Image (cartoon, rainbow, N blue to C red; front, side, top):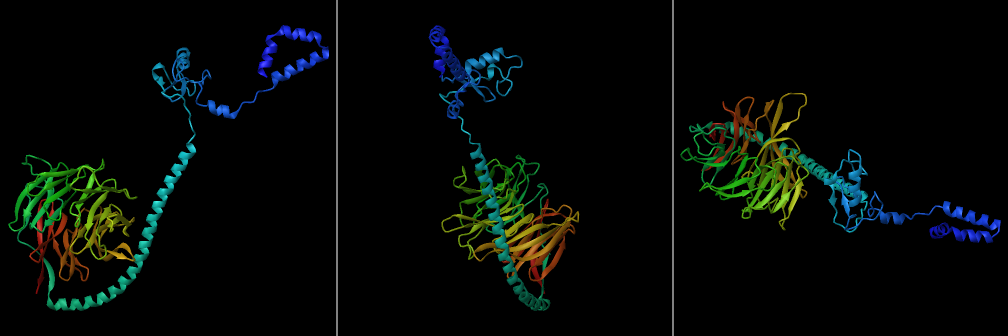
Length: 523
């Protein structure tokens, strides 16, 4: 249509000669046809628009070229133009110079070449929105699965609680009979030993552990002022002579946790740093260093049954599993929904309930159990204890977990702590924490991080704890309740059991001293 119109307009002589031969009526018809041809719009195909989208310059509307003066370029805002067009635009544009499309400030230095023969932009915003929806649904699915698991455990726990109460009734009857026998036979007490360990130069003692193979106490503390290497580390104390031995400098930060391997030949320390180090106990030299991520490591522990397996708990809530023979990279990373810092990683020995063992991960709020299967796969369980946790301790002799938690009370400025003794068991195929005994602890505005302990005795277990508000060390029994207390002028930071020739002791550590107490029967 356009070609005919151009030909007729471009040859006026032909039009005149033909019009002279035709009648006036035919001439009018010819003029009307030409008018109709001029005013009729030419339809534009949507497909052609789509094909041209992203292939033409928005200034001159010509196609982009892969080379030459009209090659495709972009400005820093991301819009595409032909090189010659945008250079002319920037040169002739009135101040301030800007992008023709979005009016963002631009100059010749913002021109960037695009190395592509043809550009097609596909609209994937819908796909991106669907991916976000899928991600949110997966997170919601994980959360609901975790809640469902907790609810299932709570139902099982309630059933177990009913059975426990029935057993407790029977146990109270037995206790009444045992109490009458104890009144006639003797009374269990605790006695301070004549020997205490005073740290005159090394202050800021925090953690206390006992090495049964070597019969030595290990204390985390600050290096003395006369030391060539300032910082923090661990000190060994020989219990046979009460002599303080060597000090192993481990970090320039306070030691937050330390753990020994099964043979007590190596120790690993964590100081809320991104790297934790493993040392040889005899030579005091660094054996390996572990840096799993940028998140500081809060806790560390060796596995009982897998002698080369190491667990590290990070501030971001992630647990890292290492083979100590390959410290360069971890072999597994576990990231639960709970992102709160990990306070303790506790290995669980193989037993009748858990034939392949596992490990507990205790966060600031919430406990998880990771059980090994026959295929060495780690099975995760959210345990039925979702409370703010202050401190915790586990004794592999009793196989019980002792936790100090904060009891919520919105009406008081003081915070009441509660000590809970629990056993990890399997009920209807699901691991659960079964409460054995609980009693109140310190009542203070800011409860101290004083860790209680449990001591295995022939007829059960004894719990030793420090009361911050009364400055007393108390001992409790799940069968008879509180049976003794001793005054203590110093604030206690940690308590640990000591087993020596079938005699039960426990050590109470303060910032500058370690007191030793002996469990005995007075007749």
